[in-house]
Length: 112
Image 1 (cartoon, rainbow, N blue to C red):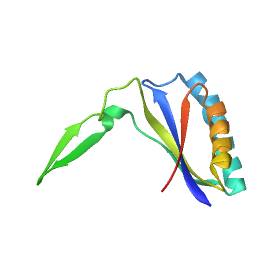
Image 2: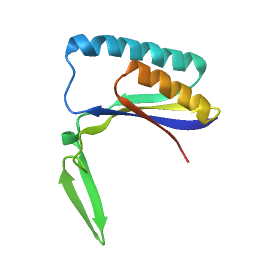
Image 3: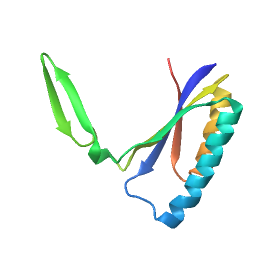
Image 4: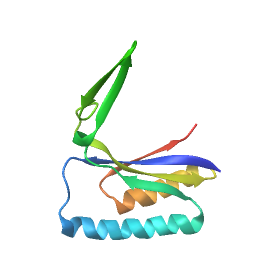
């Protein structure tokens, strides 16, 4: 089985608890469904972009800067790694994740 990355893109800010709690409950149910199907490998949420550190090598030096690499309205807020037979199967899990996390965008990408 191939592995796929389901990237979750979200806008800046934190949703109100009354919005976030049912979404997280539905996300837990989807993760359990993925586990039961043998598709789930790993999932995690990320801290906001301002907590990032960017490292860029130029010659013998490595430049270290705080904050996100780029300024954007949306950022990678979390991800799920899954196993799937093919892109169609991975897309079906991506559709389910997009439904749970609506209106957030989900990007499905295979690992090399």
